[in-house]
Length: 112
Length: 114
Image 1: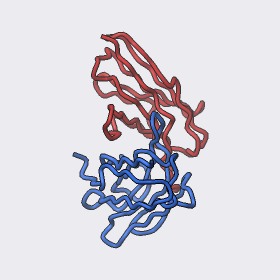
Image 2 (image 1 turned 180 degrees about the vertical axis):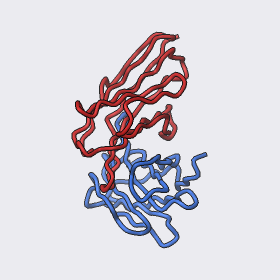
Image 3 (image 1 turned 90 degrees about the vertical axis):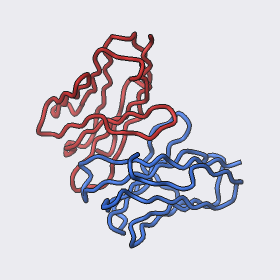
């Protein structure tokens, strides 16, 4: 979608706790919702994605949920570990357009 | 290693100058995206090419231009540089003509304008 809002901008959690990052998008035709992790000084890398025909997807300690009606999707990280500390970006894209627009990012700090 | 190569890794130049950043996508990828990441900022979409054709433009300044060559490598040209152009410039590639798929990012080119 053209506009993607992401919250919170920073998030600190204790090791072992869960972390939730939320994104909202404006284009109702958006159909692909990836999440990227960017460690300090490194390139963004895809960690999980979801398509509009699916409501939830899990991969070990991470999961993404999608609410198409409300036009928002969330990243859930359970049992957080120090190595989860990074900046996380969501994106929403639409078939037929070519703009891959990212949210503003969430800096996650996992405190040992 | 994502398979996307960006050069140079670091570049220091003066205001008013012009620089060219180069990107080689993963083997077989036809789409190339350029992003600007300023300090502690997000990924600002600049422009996207598919198989040599410009497909989408984001917040790319008129002082910036890009192209994708027949061998699929891409160049981002930044001219009349200003202090605010200092940033990390990422190139990313994907295999799909549409955008519903993973982007593979290069390591970035860090530009410092003094």
